[in-house]
Image (cartoon, rainbow, N blue to C red; front, side, top):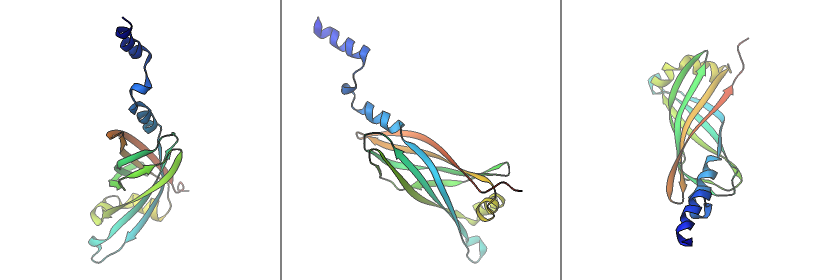
Length: 168
């Protein structure tokens, strides 16, 4: 009789030692992400259609947990909001295999290369925010895939960064 009650009792009370991945899932959900900086760089070429705009992005990742985590992949879409309009700029991938030590904060960097056609479509906003320092908001919608005891755990993440100053 005692043996028959044990599984039921464990189900009702919950036992973390029976699911070691639970602590890792909780630790993964405690991660925080912050878009820290956007570094635009224009690479001019002739003819001008070969020019590209390179956006360097710094993403801060904080792991407040006591567990070491590893990100298999980290990437998503970057947008720019300026003058009441939104401009999707493209998809970005951060380096694979990001190691997140317990109780640590680290910055990962990636670059997005925008061809002339994409730059031209969003030129008004890019020129205002990146070159003239006008107010704008860079936003990043990312999906992180973490390795939790050999199994993937996908986390949707969002972060934004205000830059520049409002027009006088």
